[in-house]
Image 1: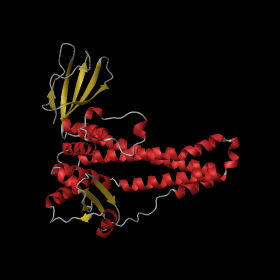
Image 2: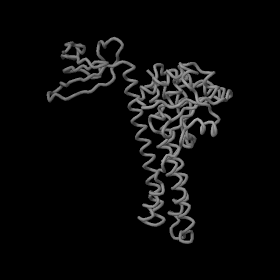
Image 3: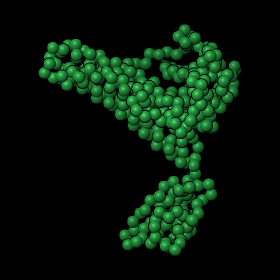
Image 4: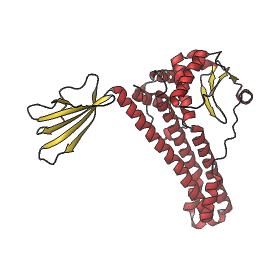
Length: 348
């Protein structure tokens, strides 16, 4: 059904318009002649604003179709999250591709095409041999396996988060008796995964804030970030070994080609920067994904605020969200300021 209207009528414009109801918004098309097309509509649907505007040619002089999409702030946040996650996925792909290319070039410098093939094969991801069990977690981390009877509310939150993330199996929850520490860790293995929560985090955060932290860790598991980071670690190790082996084996021949020697010397540092870039993008992507897994997105912002205050005794200011310069390139994780600034923009 078309809803006829004329929101563009005025002294300098004449036309007709109709609205197409969207799932959570409205699309309007207006045939406009004369005047300035950037003039705002005289009214908009209650609680909505213009999210996008486009002029479409009609083939007639001084006449065009004006397309406007109205949507709510929550809808805009959803679109921003999707765009952000897509960009992060591309950044992650570029980082892995850059490491593969760097490894292949190092191998080619050392021994031509055969060297490039051997280097890339050496950088292949090894099988995941991490077996998560209560004995292993107690032995390596001193963590104790929790059961639903001990903390039913926490497990109910985790189950709902995993349902939204479409995980086949919920990760096991472990409690680390560290009252002076506020932290959480996600481990992925076979046949199960696990999340470790410290005692300090459980006692200093509200249920909503703990749910936000759980959503972030579940997002890491859902995104299979351990696979990406393990592969990057393997590639980084292969680049370092190949570059050093090439320098050691042909040191006497570099007199005539110092550029190649300089490239091999700098390759491990370049690989380290690419690894850091991948790690930062996976952290930011987990934050964006976590917003879709909880009912109170601002709880994750509050949780990060508490973590920063606990560790640095400083309060966060979302306006100081981004750090420029070389310092950011040398971080394996984005600063909490950057994460909070991003979440403040993406949260509905």
